Length: 359
Image 1 (cartoon, rainbow, N blue to C red):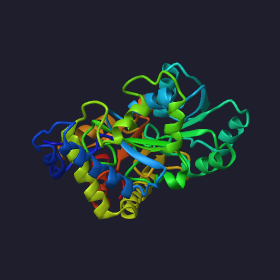
Image 2 (cartoon, rainbow, N blue to C red):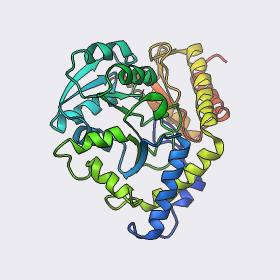
Image 3 (cartoon, rainbow, N blue to C red):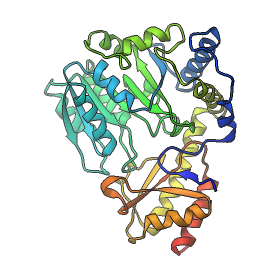
């Protein structure tokens, strides 16, 4: 039996999208591919309402590639890395692995990154880049990137803002023009509801100009080279062509639904899940900073999450256990991609029955 995924990613992929990957292959330097890719770029630009000074690019990789791209092509000397969970820490470790200096501005797991704390650090004048994870899926915490972007653009205009939006782009609100970020990136297996394998990034002209000044950018991580090929509507290396067909179709569906409706659908799922969680358990994230794509719930009743999943799988569903040190102490429900509130209600009702929770 297929188990429908309500984990923090990968998420469910419809048969319609899976079928798009059955197109006959074409050459990645062919006119046909350039036309396909140009169409995808146009759709991404339209959906994310990109201004003329911000451009999308699609790389064949997981979103984590962009940790290295930021480290190799954006950070000049020193980055301020905001850490409040496992994936923001991974971002920082990648920057250090690229040979760059990084100071970790740490918050407790479940706590949101605070704009004032960033501003205090930036007053030192030590940093040329700030990195942050918008939606820390290890804890279900959503940091206020709009407020952070506003402060950086106003008071520290030369500092680059790079955002990991892997588990929120195409679900939550992440318009670069409203945030004021320079790089924001995601993976296709989350809110885009595609198979894993592509990373989507929205990059400012400022970031590209910065990259031109940074030596030793690597090869696959060379932002300047990536955008040299973008001018021809091509990729620097052989892309996953079947997934490009799937992404093209996904963008059609997202545009048809509209940006605001996509956001409100995710918001509705989150609010219903959080109300359910507060009735029976407690939310793990700091109040007011809960994710709208991944709910991380404290296992206050000491239930066996592994055992729950065994029972859920018998009925065709699976949710996420806690991540790392939070395993069995929390559990996570991913409500992203093509899921809707009616389906979430169905799954939560099954959990009520398995765990004999009061309804």
